[in-house]
Length: 476
Ligand code: C2O
Ligand code: CU
Ligand code: CU
Image (cartoon, rainbow, N blue to C red):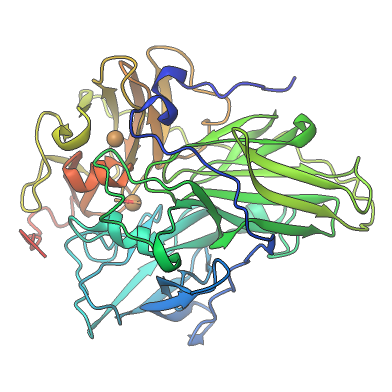
């Protein structure tokens, strides 16, 4: 059977907010969808990969006329896609060529914090660099890199500091799924922007403490994109890289598609659907089968009523591969009986956002937990209904969703996650464990809420080194 609903609390959708900015179909000509290049290593051995990542300014021809001033990683806007292979040790040389301090956060990687993780305690000042090393030890998934300085994460992401990274492993590589990057396997970074005079962005002018939005969809840094379909099946790895906007995705003809993965793993079983909602920072991977279309046809991906991508169908060879019924075994470690439930509340909206009644402080640890122990966390959105949806994110770990107000999780949130949407007045229970030590942030991923203080920090203690001290900055 085919899922044909978006699941979440409709009265809490963005479009009920007084400051909502509706999407508009761009009036400019269609452009080929930008496919970010794959980042080439500086050096590679059988076990180690060496990369340089440079945060830089640039300018891009997004609209006819003046180029838009942008920021990106090794590219003028967004960045190149990094490929991580499970088991490899990664050496990153992180360089800041921007006019201000930034950080390089690996959203979704389970690597030690706070330095490798790249939150607010790992600044790289203008003209400087930082070297980090970490090992990839997690299942295949798409993660991402974004700036995370406090409190200007939102503004830097708006300038363009976000890039996709793909973790590969042998299990996923053996499954009959599309994985020819750029041909039948493409990252789709969903963002929205407002163009001001001379085609420029102006974050301050558009500022909204509940999340900055713009009317123009920007997909992989392309305005009004089309994609040439040359294979029957195409895998789309959606990343909601918007500051606030949630996207309700569906195709023309109500074309059904199959979701195969969420944030941090494949789903245990594929889920057939024709409607999919994705909120800030989440990843959702689908396979679309264009088998019923002819060369010359066009299939449109929409969010609500606004076209996002035009898929232009070309000749392709028939593809009868079937997506397996079993894709992944989601880890389900036993909860440690000594650890009670940990309660987190997501409070308020606009300037009054907080977590557990407090605003974030860089030099305050809010909670401690031993490494490798498993605990149930109860995440509550205390907004009255209708209120707002808060996408809750944790650094440094993967979690599983246990229940929503006591009910089963949704069929497409049964894999490993790092971001989970919480409806107003809802308690989402998750199973949390860390395989790496350090200080990590957890927060709402409406980025203005995070910058506004709906964020806290956990210290994950390695039993082999329980007294390890972390240097916590109190400003950047
Ligand atoms: Cu996408 Cu604190 O992260
Ligand atoms: Cu993160
Ligand atoms: Cu929020």
